[in-house]
Length: 362
Ligand SMILES: *[C@@H]1O[C@H](CO)[C@@H](O)[C@H](O)[C@H]1NC(C)=O
Ligand SMILES: *[C@@H]1O[C@H](CO)[C@@H](O)[C@H](O)[C@H]1NC(C)=O
Ligand SMILES: *[C@@H]1O[C@H](CO)[C@@H](O)[C@H](O)[C@H]1NC(C)=O
Ligand SMILES: *[C@@H]1O[C@H](CO)[C@@H](O)[C@H](O)[C@H]1NC(C)=O
Ligand SMILES: *[C@@H]1O[C@H](CO)[C@@H](O)[C@H](O)[C@H]1NC(C)=O
Ligand SMILES: *[C@@H]1O[C@H](CO)[C@@H](O)[C@H](O)[C@H]1NC(C)=O
Image (tube, rainbow, N blue to C red; front, side, top):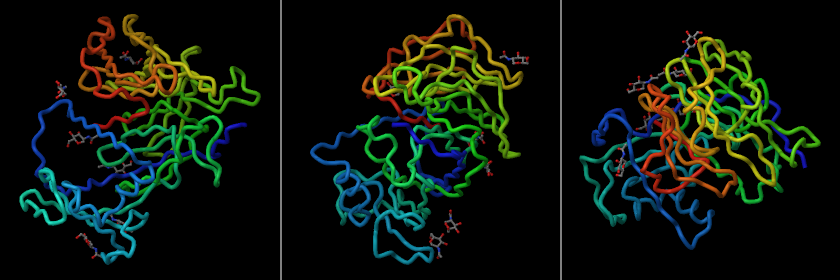
């Protein structure tokens, strides 16, 4: 079965309005990496039941120490008969920041000093998608680039992804969904980055031609690269990745005029997938691909579907997968970009949970 890709994948721009009012009573955080982690395992339930509990707004006061009230309303602020997240409705939220001490029930009084209200629109992406990349344009807008979509009622490639549950509807407080100029090619697992009001699309995976050239691969790496100018809404082709370095699902990091492309994968098939170690760099001034210092040219172990980026002058790769989907890793690799000849380091600190296909945000 051949994978069907949407004919016009596009860049979508989403503006995010903070659900919290302008003034905040959040505690001050020290400058640098904002470091929090949480983990919860919900046992003896199903995805559907967990989703049902999380979207049952009238029940929130009975158990939720943070969101004390969440009322779905229409545009005139009239409470709706269905108190569930539905697109194009609004929510009036009353929250406690910091959260009330546990346990709470519907009679627990608010702490007035910790009470905040907000009013958010519920919207969602125009269609479910996965295997895309999101890049931050500025502090309020992210772009969703590439990926695969459902076509009509067809679930994408059911026999190749038997363990993928159907994507849950996205219910974020997003506004201004603005499809932009379609991508120059359908691409999934793209490597994306933003710099100077431009979105760089530096290779990714594309549909393998039929018959598939290797090992029944569905998707193969392409090095084709493009830049999208937000001001002019135009795509322009860039030099492709050097032959042999094509990959998708890489970590990207922007530092000055350089975009680093780290690890990734070159194919995905029912039989398996690989994980790349090499690091290449794109110079946005010369618009040429450049080698990196030899000790910086490979991460310690292949990674794809990892997260990372540049913080200060350090390029990080966190977690990700080594070959198969189930092979999720918890190591943190880092490279000091001021001293790349020192090479990649593996941090003594590991992630609390190994994971792949996550997303980072700062
Ligand atoms: C992140 O939090 C962990 C656990 O509290 C701590 O050990 C670590 O030093 C923190 N890292 C940074 C960069 O703040
Ligand atoms: C609904 O309530 C929000 C928050 O109080 C307010 O900003 C908005 O103007 C109200 N809308 C209408 C139509 O009253
Ligand atoms: C919410 O959506 C309404 C109707 O679509 C729109 O007029 C309004 O500007 C939006 N408000 C916010 C705060 O996004
Ligand atoms: C962020 O970028 C979007 C898209 O270019 C633009 O519409 C918006 O005005 C920008 N916002 C800020 C705060 O710069
Ligand atoms: C985003 O906001 C932070 C904090 O206000 C500011 O330092 C930074 O320059 C902003 N970034 C952009 C791209 O506007
Ligand atoms: C990027 O290219 C420009 C123009 O060729 C060059 O001057 C600059 O040194 C390059 N940057 C790096 C970090 O190699």
